[in-house]
Image (cartoon, rainbow, N blue to C red; front, side, top):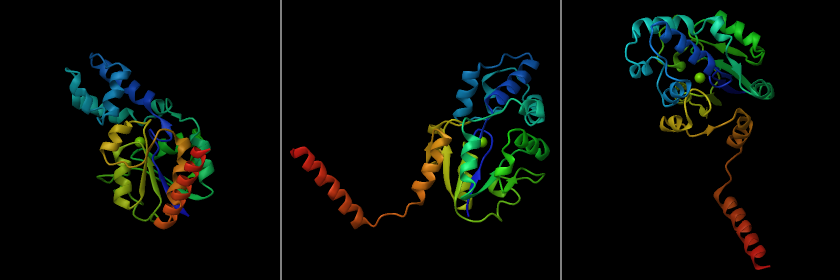
Length: 235
Ligand SMILES: [Mg+2]
């Protein structure tokens, strides 16, 4: 079966409450005023990490912030703020009969990840779940187990990490513009297919799998269509 490599955060689940609440909690703990949610997400969607955007709020101890952020971001109490996107479970359930669904995430806490996938009733749809181990990696393509996956298919995700995974492993990237990065940013990072809803995914995949029509057939069909337009116009 053709593989579809799914990202989790920002792709299947909405992480906006977890990321912003943790950011606000840590920065407020240092006595610094947090950016409002709209400003925080404007920076994140334009390509910045939470650590990057500390530059716009002077007075933050970046080292202490980073330690607290890394410590908190995968803790169950914060993970409990995540919600599946509307239709996410339905879509993966529909795709899994025809595709080999693999979840690939840069999360480091496998135990917390599995517990969350169980709680969201998502775990059983994936034939394989790959996350960040203790090894140092420079991208999702270097995670343990990725090199052994069957070739081809798609990588579906919401950030440049997913575009890189697709290009490094020879798959088609399908990007979602509603997650952590904006459609404009994803396009600037080389995304060719950007969709705004997971509901468009089955259709995009089906269209990608249609054989290309030979040029002469396409020309003939276009000619017929043009003739029909002329005919209709002449009545
Ligand atoms: Mg993501």
